[in-house]
Amino acid sequence: MQIKQFLIAVCIGLMFAACSNSEDYFNSDDNVIRLTAQIEGMKTRVATNGNNLHKSWFEMDETISVYIKKTDGSNVEGISGNCATYTVDDTGRMWSTETPLYPDDGSSVNIYALYPSSFTNTQTSFSVKNDQSSPEDYLASDLMCAVKAGVSKSPAGPITLSFKHCLSKVILKIVTTGTDLVATDATSIYMDGARTSISLTQNQTTGITLGSPTGSNSGSIKMGETYSEGGLAAIVVPQTISSGQMIFDFVLNGNICVYASQDITFEPGCVHTITVTVNNDNVAITNYEITDWTPGTNYDNEEGIYE
Image (cartoon, rainbow, N blue to C red; front, side, top):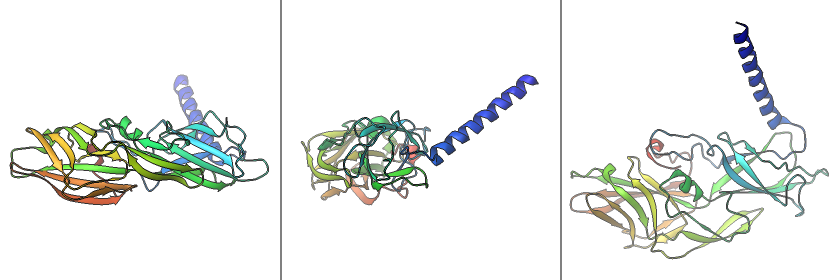
């Protein structure tokens, strides 16, 4: 009985400590610049194939690079140089081994954040992964930035960094009609004809401005080894696929190549859903839809769509 009472007391103590830590994080009156992260408009972002479904702003323990400077361009105290790497949890709360501080004189700061954290504020181009069949490589292709300019200390709590998707998302849906073929039997699914790099410029108060896609348009992006019922997705740099150009290929009772029947322009921050219909006699794109990359774009995320 004493042991049980002791364990209960320990658990209650830990609960109070956790609540206290959370309250300290959000409500502390010191000069620490506290941050939280969200993806603009998003409630879900990534779902792996099968039953490993995550519903969060970011995946647990992803990292973000955060650049903080005073509005006059000088460095803030508590941070080496002007950049700190933050870890984010699945509620959007961020923490770092560095402790950037608001200026003692009450002046404002500019905050500029980048995802993935391997991308720095000096780079002038970005490349997506050629193999996005795993969630890790898909996420590593999802260039995002967040900007908060002229921020000063506020009793309202942490500063929320709202990240925007800079690139384009393509979803392939395969439909079979009038045939013994089954869409989920499709394997080795690739997106073709897309350039995988893009030039860009960065500004700490305005964010990322995209330039032109670079490199060859003869490469491929692996979307998946097998097809999932809800479709497969890839992130691409904004560009135009010309009419007549091969855009997808996969294996379904033989090699199948899909060609664009019109010019297709992938817009930044948008989801492009392309339906390919396969029967015994023909393969064609039968539907093409563009939507914003927001929670309304909910593509059966238990079936392999990375959001």
